[in-house]
Length: 139
Image (cartoon, rainbow, N blue to C red; front, side, top):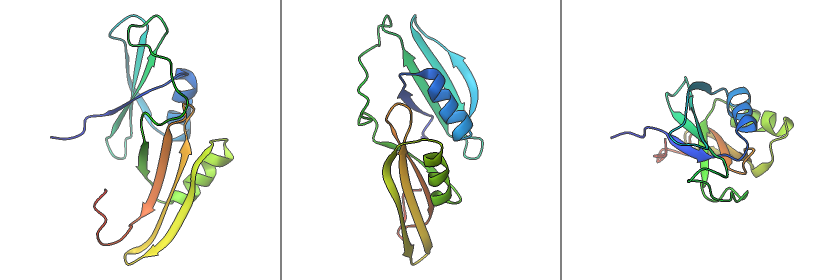
């Protein structure tokens, strides 16, 4: 068994596509709709093979519910990057709101850094680099 994809609801499909493709480098691989008022865009991270589906529901779609812009429905998505501090700072410079400031520490395996920003829907997007230590089992 393996994770096939993560799907997140978005309130502005165009802004979300710009963020995930231009800012994070994911590639659009498929666009489809299974019902009236629904738009699904499948994105791919070419480095990892992971997929992310952006789900948009118009008010006339049977799956529509009012969107809470607090990002708690999905806790966070974490990206492994070469330099978390640099990636974090670049996205904040582009206007991404900070969810959790960059955290850096030395570990028995080297250096670890992690920080989280918010995407256009308020969902927390994290970036980490290095290892949290020999017992790092989260990768």
